[in-house]
Length: 128
Image (cartoon, rainbow, N blue to C red; front, top):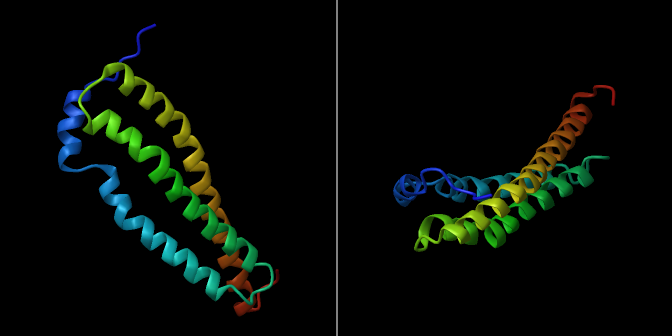
């Protein structure tokens, strides 16, 4: 079965100008700083410190995977000279690992919400 990436040439031209990495290069450090800030704020909140630490760790892990795994595959697909077989293999790997990265970020978001909810409950006096 032959695997083809639709409209790779058009995508290469578009991504030469702008790509999702442009957005995430700005947003990811902000997310990490906010996760660190949440950890600092929640440090003395019972039950929130661990969730905030998990959120920070998962946020950093998402970026580590992005730099180590996704950027090289993006180069294969969109920057390097076209090699259809290498691009197809890179796309398959990229697609599979993107689910892992999405799960990490979803876990970070969930942990952050748990930590901040516990902090707000403590401050407001709401039942826990």
